[in-house]
Amino acid sequence: MPCTGFPNSKLRTLLNSPTETAMPAIEQVRLRVALTSDVPALRELIEQSVRRLQAGDYTPAQIDGALGTALGVDTQLIADQSYFVAEDQSSAIVGCGGWSNRRTLFGSDHALVREDAFLDPAHDAAKIRAIFVHPEWARRGLGTLILQHCEAAAIAAGFRCFEMGSTLTGVPLYRLRGYQECEHISVPLPNGETLPVIRMTKFYVPPRE
Image 1 (cartoon, rainbow, N blue to C red):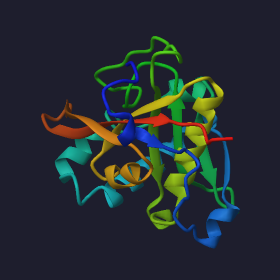
Image 2 (image 1 turned 90 degrees about the vertical axis):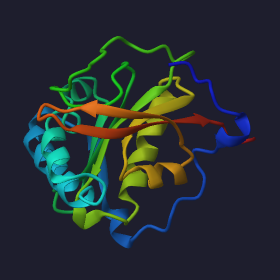
Image 3 (image 1 turned 90 degrees about the horizontal axis):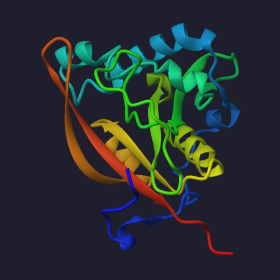
Image 4 (image 1 turned 180 degrees about the horizontal axis):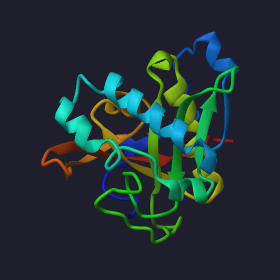
């Protein structure tokens, strides 16, 4: 989608603006490209993250219907080498997230709607995808660390704006990081429930020299 629709005064948020104070443990986290062999651990991490951290925003029925469909692992991102895992000192995966130069906004391999066509960096927004943090690592700055890593990778690929389909739980963090809400989406789920998702957009403004 073209990077249009919001006044520049609301969107000129620097990518490298100050981050929230990180716990010392974050300094020990290592980010790397996700591998196919990580998929079982990613599925377990995502389920733990969703069931514990998003329970205040979604009902158990919504969570049951969303896991594995609207919320889950998209192996296309792994194949594209644009999905990352965060490992602690014991090499346990404690967070994940990625970006994409394809049109799919959110969802797993089994999402109802997928658009695998490539984006044009000159006109389209890179998609920020599937950021999840282990519950024990919540509110330590790990989500911000992963988000910034994904944004930097998209910038290196030529993109200058970002778009995501955020869960209700993620909206406060993404607002702090300069994202603007632009659409409320009701995602139909296999069990008859619907999942509210917020489409959010951010423009990257390079720092002044």
